[in-house]
Image (tube, rainbow, N blue to C red):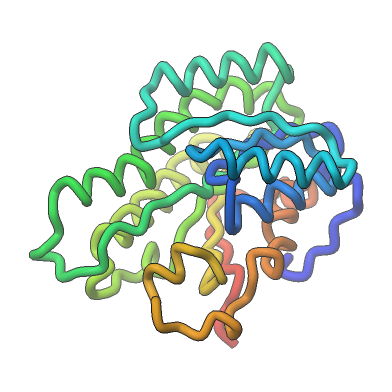
Amino acid sequence: MLNFSASLNALQNKTILITGAGAGIGKAAAINFAKHGATVILLGRTVKKLETVYDEIIEAGYPEPAIVPLDMKGATKKHYQDMANTIISQFGKLDGVLQNASLLGHLEPFKQIEEDIFNEVMQVNLNSQFLMTQALLEALELAPQASVVFTSSSVGSQGRAYWGTYSISKFATEGMMQVLADEYAGTKLRFNCINPGATRTSMRAKAFPGEETSTLKTPEDIMPLYLYLMADDSKEENGKTFVAQPKS
């Protein structure tokens, strides 16, 4: 699946929501999903960035996307329920969700973690994704086959010193995915995680400011795995964490 070659119509007639769609992996996923036939719903907090992605998709001749400007730090259960209702009324169903948006927080010793930073990271990386996924289940259940992909990290399966806040949020994300996967096992709705690995993104640059970025894979480089998990080719995959850049 790391070298998955998707046909150009692999996602035709699918509607897929991407969070953090304005930049990095979210942007690359949105454009690639649209390239393969999907109508993408671009969710993010910066309208200008979302509009740039929208324009790129339109200029390429792909299906017209939708834009949902939403700050996941402040969004409530009602925001997500209203969004789910709108998706059902406009599209009739939802075929996929890529929960890509995340905050890094601070890299620091556990005893120095501040409550407000911890809560902010948990709000975006965990609480908002819980509320959004819960609200979207009805729309996902209306699809012939539906895929929800959460974003994890290597520190979401093995704790690492000084990564406490982010690491805890990703452990919890993997746990949420596994609970949902077990509840929906044997149905047309599946849940998995992707650990993208060291990728050339702004979050990576924040975590490793002195790193030589030319050695890193770009978001585009890891898109075959994202396409695989959104395409029906992966309909038997459920409850797994896929590593986009496994160590050789």
